[in-house]
Length: 349
Image (cartoon, rainbow, N blue to C red; front, top):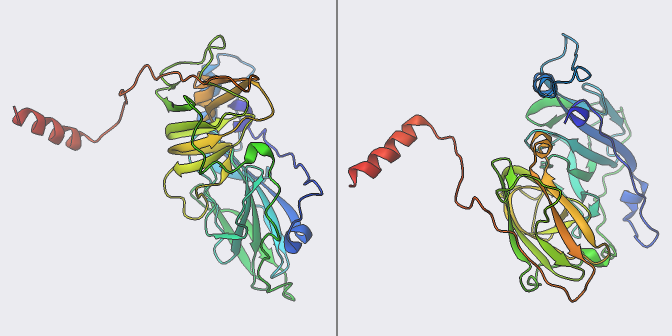
């Protein structure tokens, strides 16, 4: 928490293999990194004090607010481009508490290209807001048409986390983006699973709540759900406001996870989602342990994580670990609502 909360987050870009034929405008677009970091100095001080270690301390300038968003380590940076120029905005939201980035640029065109490092199959997909969850990434093609204009970039509830400024001209392009000439060649572990049912006994529920996963604090001696190479694995993720993050294998969104406009649709691939819904994935390469956890890092730090086991035996079986706290959910409700509910209950007897 202290590392990411202090800004220790960056990106590694893995170049595409030559087998992927990118649309011309994407291939020619300039890469612009956009690492958005959540800076919350008061909360970081509280966390540092709980470590009871004098080596951990948080200091900040008195001129800075208690909460702000830094972009590439800077406060309110400016991206400069030609009017009509397509740029490939490579976004990382290194949020570590809660809340989506909800990136939008009023007045500019945003076309989604990839999420969590995986190209979407229906590019170009026009979006108005990129509802990126904590630890999520997105590649977005962006174009702003007006000359000599400053556009504000909004995100994480902040009106201005960055600016885009266009030169005086001329307009670089008015041409719409080309779609894929042919679908990207996805590897076997990204096979479309929307019409494939889960393998026998491979549909499990994973609930994150009360600082636990299925009612259990992390124990490195305990395995969580298990599957095997080649299985179609299904998970009903009940995450509430917790971002569910899974290592090793990306998963396909099948249903649920609320209304995120055109940013999230069934069939998209992720490694982090927030909310509740059904996902599927198919382990095809790596067996062994995979880590899953809440990406609100203070929750992960205190045990909201688990280990799934994937067997190398392609004729294996799946097992599910039940929730030992099923039906228990602590909720904060207004006093007037609670009073009304209790009154109705007692008046009926």
